[in-house]
Image (cartoon, rainbow, N blue to C red; front, side):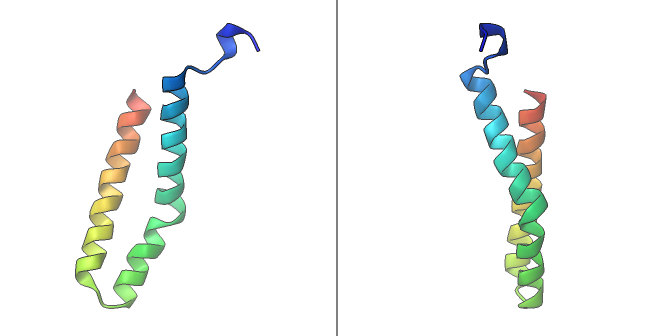
Length: 65
């Protein structure tokens, strides 16, 4: 692998974090929100919605980095 094709540590860190956040946002969080709604737990539903909003914000921050 040539130097030009190597990932820097910071680029790897960004990509790794984005992958984890994307997986959580697009595979998991909506299930957690629905579970809380089905359990009639509005406080928990709100917490999961806030976490989703925050994670989306973080994902966009990393994308812009």
